[in-house]
Length: 243
Image (cartoon, rainbow, N blue to C red; front, side):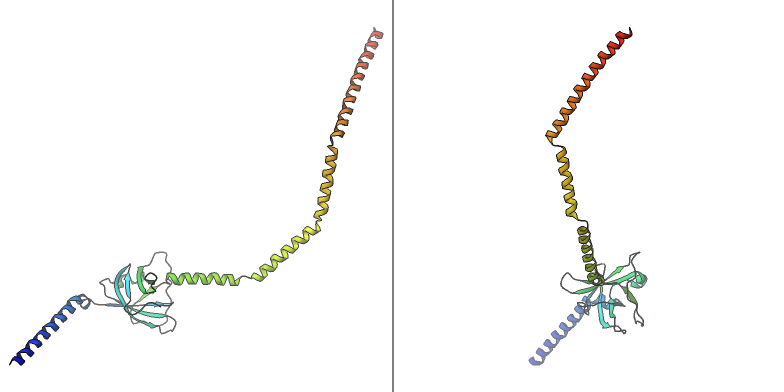
């Protein structure tokens, strides 16, 4: 009897524990069971490294679901990601205004999907699809990292497109032409002529010669004064004769 009673008691405790565990699990996840999940699809034309199944799906930083599955699209070019939205947010009402983007969590390399409203002037950068989808499709746009890499590639392509050898050759030809022009101008001869002209000017400005010129000028002035005195005397004599 004791053995049967012991087994019954143990079995009863096990059943009670099992029921409590089931009730706890259902209570903790009752919202997920009661809410109807919504499924959407996004297509990315870039690497989704770091994005895994059950990765978060956020709307303006608020978690609203998770990634259900990640596969290669039927065209073997795009990546197809199925989103499971577990929030009460109805995306169907704003599906045309929604855009999805890959974002990383800091520098960890872990990725998640961020949903955001399109801006009025924002162009549609979502890749084109030529095959049907089982769920509504949300437009996507390249991630910031993808845009940076694409910009670097464009710069490198433009640099590669430049004819650097041709530019170098043209620059060398220009320098050769300048050198030839300078040589033809006979800069040394011009410099010698300028020096000779300066020497002549300096010779003309010699002090002694200027003194001689000044003495000659003074002597000429004295002669002119004497001439004026004599002229006055002569005029006086003429006046006396006339009287």
